[in-house]
Length: 169
Image (cartoon, rainbow, N blue to C red; front, side, top):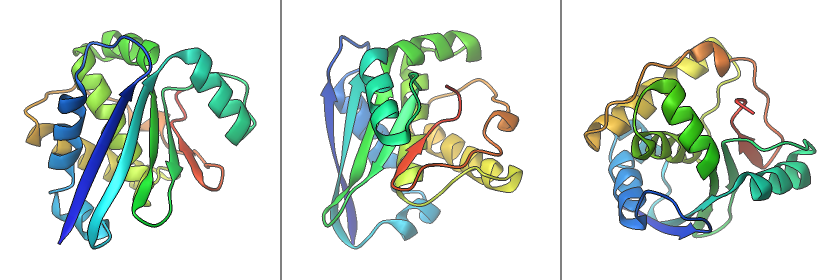
């Protein structure tokens, strides 16, 4: 049996509760394809909701790129599946762009980060379509309805080893 234990840290004031983020990721982990990639036992994922200054620092330190991005995923070891950092300012901006609420956008980014931790990527249009399909399935389990996104924004992205980040920087 695999269990996802989600720890949420809000480094900034954000319009979501840690319980909301936990529920979204726990529900996502029940999708058969996602559950199949979770290692047996309890695995911990830490989610940090932060600002663009910290996201820029993390992106510069771990990817060599001196700009903020919306989500970063860092692989873990042992019981720690990994960490996901999410920019709250990017969440607000992208929620407006995609015409849905901030909670839906944060859930979208959290699931996106989890998928990267489990090995999914979006280097090709087919990979991007699969990530999109799984992300939307996870959001439906949480009764969230996101706006439609363009997969073209994801294709062609090549991550730095050990670090996954959104190309929407």
